[in-house]
Length: 313
Image 1 (tube, one colour):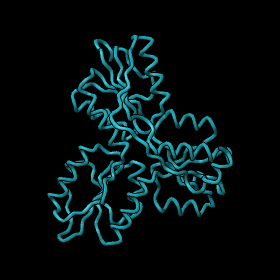
Image 2: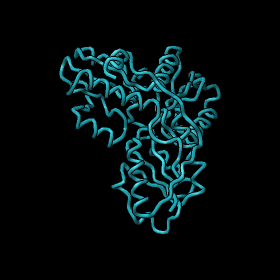
Image 3: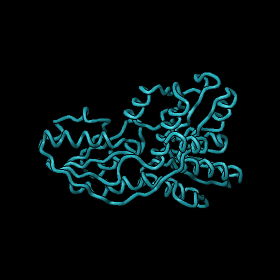
């Protein structure tokens, strides 16, 4: 068997920053330390931090007053920030800067009187945070059908934004539908879909024609990971989204000669390495690294942790 390792894969700059933030906060403040929502959408990462005394909550009211809370990479709404202040929480904001950019765009468009069409997945943490910036001005569109069915009053000023972890191709189709439906619609000056999401999808697109099977490391609630497996399937190859080597079904590998392995932006590299090692041991797999695009993006730690970082590193 041959294994092709897609590059880039795995952690993006936003995830690296969020995870390092949580590690630094633990070192400084100890446990229990609270995180609003999952720090990133990855089960192995969440489990590891839970064992270190991190408590993941979905309600600010579940955090004892005066405690330390870290906001996840997906961002939070202004209401959550206010609720934290009311409970006298020490808040550390590990929101990905690319998500913060979308929040700022939402505030700007809303202040200028636009109705904002947000392309994204209902209930996703990032979507909840973005919609919370201007709840009276944002309409959620999930797919082409809902875009086609959307009715707005005549002469409405319309703008669009997107969740950062969407399928590039699917988002573009929806945007085209919206542009036909609302000819005067405006959007952000730059793409909202993050560089890492785009790069990982690009690598899968380029490498899928060479392989028989695709394994995507990532969790089921990870939007960008799910998009990778869906993309591979849409290109005609079987693909499976798994959290770890334990989920590999040997039946998938019958008559399989070339396997592509990639990982969503929130999946740690060690789970990739475990899968590769398992294929080496059980299938005498030969591994080839394929670099489609290089990434050198880094984001600074939250300002609440920059001094802390120097003292504990």
